[in-house]
Amino acid sequence: MNDGMAKWVAKDVHDWHKTGAGRILVLGLAFKQDVPDLRNSKIADLIAAFRNLGHQVDVHDPIVSPAEALREHGLEMILAPSDTYDLIVLAVPHRELLREFGRFAKLLATGGSIVDLKNALATSGQTPAGVKLWTM
Image 1 (cartoon, rainbow, N blue to C red):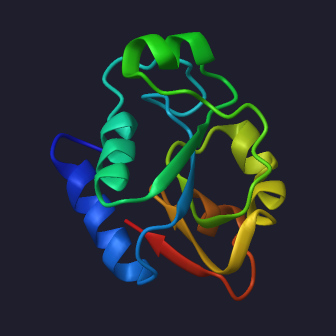
Image 2: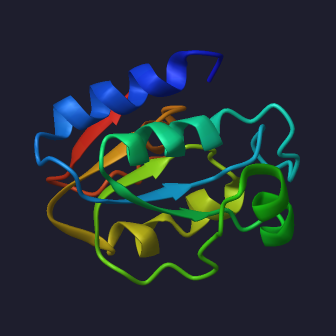
């Protein structure tokens, strides 16, 4: 995701989902897949854009240091998501997230949707049946 895209993506997803403000789980915060580096990551901008639209956003990234996420972006990460979410955003498709995606998909509320920024779920066949999917 490059500069300026975060606001556009957040607004487009917000309008597409059509449920108003809701709970969002963002999976992946790193700059690059399977690399724990946060430098130049635009995912924090996406999270801020969703929050500016009124959404409550939780963040989970199994390979990024929670202390670094807090220091670099002021974001507290959820270590083991267990709440119910209206929207799950697969922002950075780390192998570990893809392997565990079925567990995360079970956290979707009835009528919930999935956003796949890198189109990783379609190629892995892990999109749950009957769930709306938004991709770039």
